[in-house]
Amino acid sequence: MTAPPFPDSLCHRCGHLRLSGNRRGSTFLACDHPALPRYLPQPVRACRGFSPRVAGGGAP
Image (spheres, helix red, strand yellow):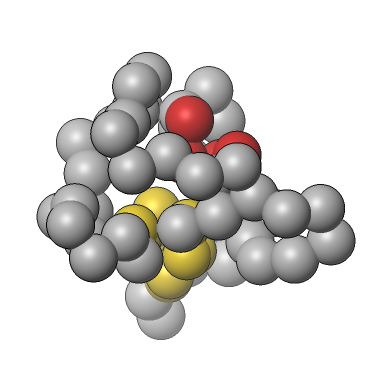
């Protein structure tokens, strides 16, 4: 996978982030929060489902 897109997105600091990719090397930010769409319009600046990622766990 390439470097995660939208480095300024709030998603990169969220515990619900899951990075997914395809065979062509594209990387997508996927949200695992049950009340939100899986692929939010990026970059996310504010989110009602934001939950700070725990250090040492989850996606980058």
